[in-house]
Structures are given as structure tokens and as C-alpha cells.
Length: 293
Image (tube, rainbow, N blue to C red; front, side):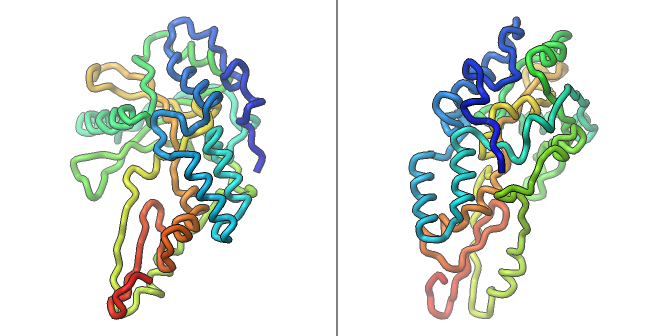
């Protein structure tokens, strides 16, 4: 899979197509600073990244040597950890400015405070940038500063295990971003989940199962900075509940990385009966022999 967002795609530490001089109000100054951080030190230097690139990459290539991970998958992941992940996008497939309003499921009186809480929780841990209140000149500024940018419509769905909370949803189908992704690779970004079938085959009489979830696994991988302008959304802040504020998601779902690198975990903790379902690790125990298979 071709990769766009390397060093040659930057001008003065910022992605091509960004015009810092047009930001007369300084609204996007933090966004510029974080993009330069990626350029100078790598995507794993971003405040919201919990992956330690040096040890992770060293273990990854050891797993390649042992035959648990394909070399091309490791190259793809290392490139993403250095420059940010592009999730099958290329600038030739995204253009123009598309701004959408949020869905009723997120802005209703009952939903609004819970979506605000979820959004601000992401801001607090560095997964999302809070760029300030949307004023009369904000959208015009976005058009001037970024050659192409989208504001996606946001909805919300209930969290089954936490009924007092809502999960914000990003509609990238509406903006056209999903259609612009090329998932074919190589390496392919498409995957299928057959964990249920594997568990049914192996969870025999005399076995027990232990399930471990990776907390906040989905927003774990940093997008390449040139993709950030397609991750804008607007919502209300807790200290300003009547005014829309501009936010930018900086992180993407971890699922495809886990699919690629399941072998790393297997090779270094020596478990032959470990399964992966999205962000959940599932271990099967043989109770008769009293050891983990």
C-alpha cells in the first residue's frame, strides 16, 4: 500500500495543503504544534499515545523473526507508528470542504450532556483536540487554512453495559471519507472475525474461558496529521452548553493493528490458545490438566 504522509509531504513541519499564515486568530495553533511534533519526533510522541515505539518495534521484529508476524505487516505498522496511520486514504481521493450538522441522537436534551462528557473525556487524555468555540468566522477560516476539510455529523448510541453513558458516533459515510478509503492493500486493511467459530470449536467439556478487555482500545492509534482536517466535528462544551465548539479526532481504531500483530502477543507470552475479538483477548484453560493451553 502506498504511503503518502512521510517526511517529503511536509513543508515547514506541517502537511502540504495547510496554510498556517491564514490562521490569524490562532485557533489552530495547537493543531500545528502537534503536527510538528509528529514530524520531528514521531506519532508516538503525541500526548495521547500510550505505545512506546522503541520496545514495541523491537518486539515486533523479533516476532517477525520467529515467524509469528509477516514482514510487510510489520513494515506497515512501523511506518504508521512513526508518521501516523493513513487507514487507506490518499490526498487524491479527498478534496473540497464538507460541513454537516449533528444528528438528533446526540443533540437532544437527554443526550447532549452525556455526549459532551464523552467528548471531553477524550480531550482530557489527548485523543481529541478542543479548538474553541465556533464563531462567525470559524468555517471560513477552515476553508482558508486547509485545502480540504470535513466536519462530520455526530450521533450517539447507548452503551449496553453503562446505561448512564452514550457513545458518540462519527458518520464518515456521510462526508464520503469511508468511500475514499482503499482497503485492498497490500497489506490489506480488510479483515474478518472468526473468533466465535474458533471458540465453539475449542471450548470443550473440561475447559473454562477467561476474557480480558483492552480498555479504551479503539482510539489508540494516531492518524497521520494530514488526515486530521477530515476529523473535525462540532459539539457543546460543559462550560459553554449553548455554543458549538470545534473538535478534531486525532486517533483511529486499534482493531486492524491487533489483527496484524496478534502473533506478537502469542510469541512473547507463549500461549497457544489465545484468541482475539476486536479489543478483547480470550484465553482458554484446560481445567483437567490445570494449565493454560
